[in-house]
Structure formats: C-alpha cells, structure tokens
Length: 434
Image (cartoon, rainbow, N blue to C red; front, side, top):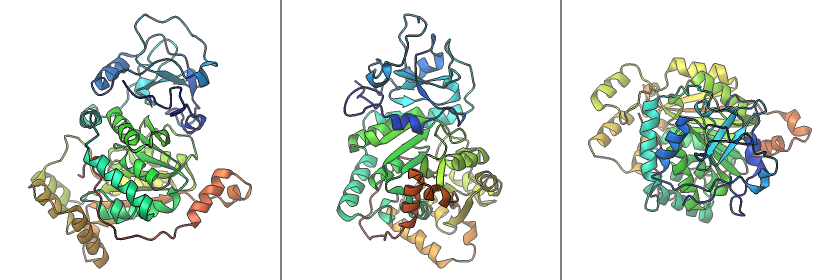
C-alpha cells in the first residue's frame, strides 16, 4: 500500500493549510481549494496512474476529514473509480488532480466539472518518459540506494558538526565548483525559510531541509522524480516538510512572494529562460535568492565535445548560452551574476568518466576549485556555469511588520557560517551533466 500523505487524515501527515496557501494554479494567480472530482477524469490521468502503479499500490481515496465538510457531492459520476485521491480547484472552476499525494498542477491535467480541458502540456515527451522511467526504477526500492545513504550521512554531519552546505554537501561530479558557489550564496537564507528545487529528484530540497529549512518544495513535470523524492523524504523522516508538486519552471504553481530560496541543479537549461526568470521573480520573497548550476555552451568546444563524447542521456536539451542568459536577466529584473568554471578540467574529466576512469569526487572538486582560484587566462571558456540572483529587499515591508519580510531580512543579515573540512559525502541521482 502507498503510505498516507499530507492529503490523508491522520496525525502523521495532516492536510496543512499552509500547503494550500503556498500553492496556486499554473496561471500564477489563482488560489486552490479542495473541490469535487470532475465527471470524467482524463485518459491521460488513467495512463499516468497505470504507469506509476508498478512502483506503488493504490492509495485510499476518501477526502480528508479536515476539508471534506466544505465539499459537496457534485454530479453523479460513472461507476469507474476516480484515479486521483483528491482534486484541487480554482474559483473559475478549473480542477487539478492529486495523484499518489502529488498535486498535478500542469495544464495537461486541467479539468472542468465535466472532464478534461484538452490542453496540451507542451513538455518534451521524450524527456519526460526518460526521466520518469529512471526515477520509477529507483523509487521502487530506495532502501539500498547510494543517494539515500549519502543524504543520511549529511544528516549526521549536520547534527554533529553544524557544518552546512559546504564542500562536503557537493554532489555534482563535473560541476562541483558551480554547485558550491550556489550553495554558499543560498546558505544564509536557508535556515527557517521555504526552499524550492526546480526539477530533479529532490536531493537538493532534502539537503536544504537537513540544513534547517522550515519546509521545501520539489517542482518537476516528471511524476517519477517526485515519487522518488517522496520516497527519500520518508526514509529520512522529512516527508511532513517536503511538498512534491508536478509543475514546470515556466508556470510555477507557487504563490507570489512565498519562496526564500530557489535552486536549479542542471535543470534551468531545460526551460525557456525568459519565462522561468519571470516566475522566479514572482515567487521569491523580497530579498529572496535563486541559484543555478548549469552547463554552459562554449562555442565550438560544445559541438566538438558532443561529437566526441556523445550526450549522456537521450534528451534534446541544450546548455545555457549568452542569448538565453540575457533572456533570464531581462525577465528576472533583479541582479543576476554569472561565473564560469572548469575551462581546463571539466571536459577532460568528462572524457575520463565516459571511459570508466572516474576521479574521486572530492579530488576532482578540489582540482577544479584550484583552477578557479588561479584565474588562468581562458577561464571564461569554462563549460560549467553558476548563476546567482536575488530580489531587492523591501525595508518598508519589514518595518511595517510583515512577518515573512522580517524573517527574510533576519536570515539575510546572518551570513557568517564557515566551511569545515569533513570527509566527502556523495549524493547522486539528479539529472546528469551535459
């Protein structure tokens, strides 16, 4: 049986009002409440339910007692059972299913009272299928997963030493310096805040929870990734603080001004950066921060490297380039800084890795960090990119007593954490480097 989720009754995972306050419809403005199911759920929803069934058994489908009193029965439905546990809807009558505890806030699953609206999702089917298949295989049996073992080790590091989001927490084998720069930039805002990971299987969101975030959200259009994130969270005892949500970076289903920290780990280059930038600006609090560790498209070198080494995954995405970075900056509106890494080490390390000769992750990280520190001529040709951006703080909001603004200002002022030198911990499982 699927274990109970926050959408079920029970003391372990109650339906929290704060979760609904955090969510919104993909239009970015419409609030959501629990509503009756439509008369005819879409065939796509049935297909998805069947797709995840091998990894998970059916969940109970009764509505949570805490919200059921305000939900009317609605029109009579066909005898075939509803594949969704619950439905969330807007004031305009648009409804979205909750499947396996995951709100499916994607246009492709939008319904009205009668049935599906027939909106095309717009995501690459090839990419979704690839990442879903990989994640569902892992979600079916996470007990011995090396990623889970790494997360448990980080929990011990955090508890015993208090050392947070330093070199020990880096898991990107070929983009370690970019990830570390992002973590160090986000770290002052994590404790006590709301952290969001865009895409992937939730390892960064879980690390933010281990580092003291009050709650975290993983947003991905790949339901398999969300199920894997939930499996990791349950094994770590963090399921009540992690909210998996099916959505996209271009249509973030999160309320405006609700997020303190937002991170993309090798996923921003899958997105329309202009649309994503507008969404990041909308959901971040005043003073909130976002960061991204991404592949950078070096002219000629990327084409040559792809021809020689091939792509590690059967997907059609392209690294960030100058035009896409400019589109992100223009749409975000706040300050966005960028830094390139690995001009002389990343492609050779990738080539060795493809040949089965992988350097220890900690060794490679320190070699690449040394390269960064030397600032050699040609460093701008680095194929690994770190982006850091922030929303301008709002002193007025903090002064007049808005609680979230006060908390955000307090975290931003407290940025004196120091890095330790602890044994390396490997946490893998996110989308691969390109």
